[in-house]
Image (cartoon, rainbow, N blue to C red):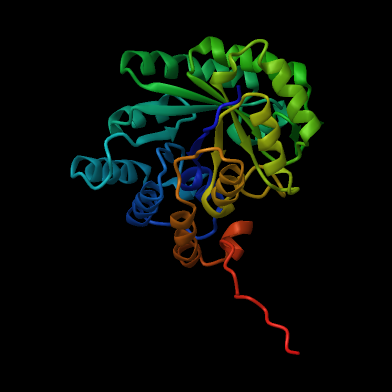
Length: 314
């Protein structure tokens, strides 16, 4: 029997903001998190401990984490909210430990070219970097989530082998991550690919440990999420308003919009725990902060509001 609920992991504060030209300060980012949480968000990737030289939008992540935890301690953000941060290496992991976070995420690509362009190392080298990170995570009792990017296609190499993705998913699972997010980084996937890849992935990694991370570059994200859901996947990464994109993936647009995904699932009778109305209320505020409109379809038109009955004059 298909599950009637899904988990939404909000990417807006990290994957969303990392490609925005207008850099938001720590207070604004914490306010963004607070508004998302008021809308029902339970899992938020709040930032990344990466070099501000390469990703200036993530500068000040330590301040964001400190302020968010301060609001939790003050009771303004519920304790049950799970905050996570992305870390690329041991240095980033030390920063994460010092910040007090209880969950981090690691990142690997399924394309050598993308790995070199994005994190300046080969795939094998990236997994080598994970070893001290995982050891520190175990020592400090920190949960680790894993990302695999370019699972369906690479901007530099084109199509990516399913066998390679499956092999890397197995490899990441053996590291000890609790969840693996399968990413369509450039929004090239189609329903056929999604069904085919997840069918293979489920044979080597329990489906409860798999998540879907779809960008909407070609307008296929909702269809791909539905296909993954039909395969048993119940965790999906989304970004408020469709914010963002990857600075190292030419032409890629943002993650699928949180509002659009919630609208689809609620229409199916599938629970998300999120309030669509409250999510939509964040859009104009965020548009003002980043100084441009958000691409979310539902965000643009809102909920259905009847104009009233039309009368025909006789």
